[in-house]
Length: 115
Length: 110
Image (tube, rainbow over all chains, first blue to last red):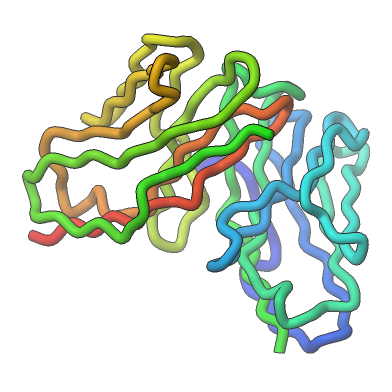
């Protein structure tokens, strides 16, 4: 158990809909990362928050947004869903903002299926 | 930008066979290098890491050496077990994020 909690574990929805994925980081970790894992794209970095502030942005679509709340949990909002958004979405956390000597702790992921 | 290239899978081995999964990288500066493992139905977890050239990371019988001259970080294990069946990801630090390779699926048969 990594200590990172993601909900829901599975989600099935229709095209055009909007969903929210939730992540609670490990106790004491200030950084939260979101990654998308799909068969054709591999693991893609979406966005990072550190202590409530956006820290780094990766290949995140404009239809997607995220935030980190004062209690450090984070939510990833996906809107106007398309079939290609079907993927496993991972949240990860770390103590610091940088990673040169640290590591990421991953949750078990939220599997999104768009029909 | 920084990138990681892993050998294509899937890799299928018999128990007690020798394992090598190749990883090469392109990076500016001096990134830290990692191997993560993803067991079925689970999130990724750190297997080992190396933070500077010539460092060797090791854990659970797996090893990888940070080779700056060949920009490589190949994963090796002398004798694999069925329980090692998983997807293995090579990764490097890119600023404050990790950039992952495509992953290599390993299946070990009894």
